[in-house]
Length: 154
Image (cartoon, rainbow, N blue to C red; front, side, top):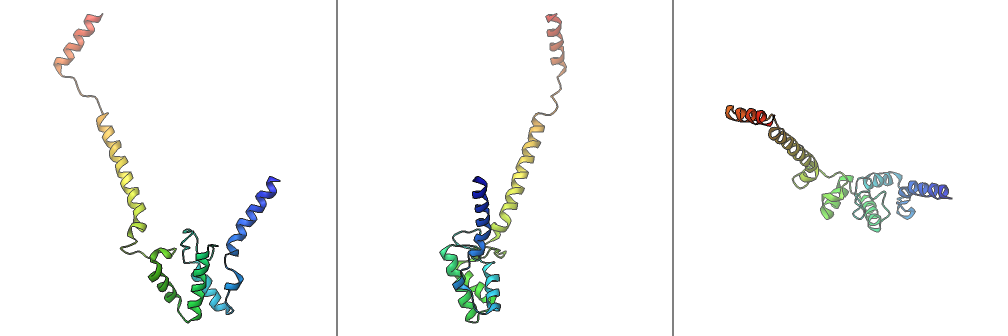
């Protein structure tokens, strides 16, 4: 029974993205529909945030898919549609936002954190080696005192 449920769950998980675009959303013109699907794959679902609107079942994703199709039917180019959505929602609506001053932290932040963390670890290791390095040499006076203590102990 567990295997059957697991199999059904896996089949459902594989089918769900295909069910995101509803039949009433599909355009009659196959060329426009193909453009709409390609654009929908580049636009982030603002609810799910890690899915495109083409894959998402959220109501907002559906509204955005319909909006994309309406703009294409109205004669907008693919870039016009993307520009309209970016003007309305910002660069966040794109699954691959452009590299600019506003998104620099998004693009380069993880690398900067990695470099800073690596530098910090290396400096700590270097400092530890310096602190726990070779022992300091005894002065002549200290050597005589150690020898005297060792002689007295025997």
